[in-house]
Amino acid sequence: KLIYVLNGPNLNRLGKREPGIYGSQTLEDIGASLIERAETHGCTIEIRQSNHEGQLVDWLHEAEDKGAHAVLLNAGAYTHTSIALLDAIRSIRAPVIEVHLSNPHTRESFRHVSWVGQAAKGTIAGFGANSYLLALDAAAAL
Ligand code: DQA
Image (cartoon, rainbow, N blue to C red; front, side, top):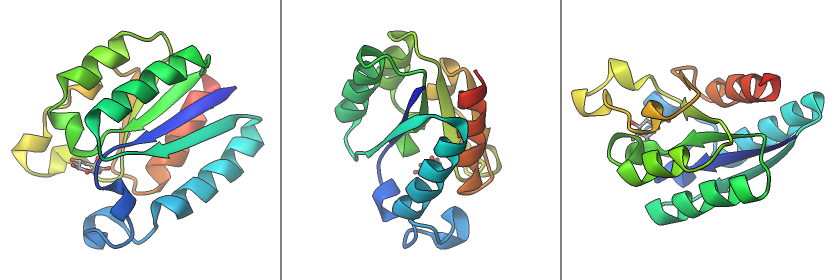
């Protein structure tokens, strides 16, 4: 099973970026734990990060074209703004699991809306770096 892990804007700054909210692990650290966990599930993972909305749209299409079993998507702030990502998720058959390190519902009201969540299979949020591992377990079990 091939699983894409797509990360949106500012997630390349993890570890340095607001560590009180997002923790001290870098995206590379999270990637290393994901690769380890994927092996236990017999899954292959493809991890990407971009600060650009259209690139994330292209990668969702690519995941579908490559026959991905599922996609984990932490769209960062585009979660709360991007109808293009909502449409891209709707345009593919692969289930998308929305992931967040923080729990947006406990934060500013502008984070309470998720366009991504409107088309996602489900959402895992609020468990820090572990949100990704929980999402991978869920994806592998689909
Ligand atoms: C985030 C939550 C978003 O609201 C925020 O814009 C991010 C990170 C998270 O993982 O907690 O960039 O997606």
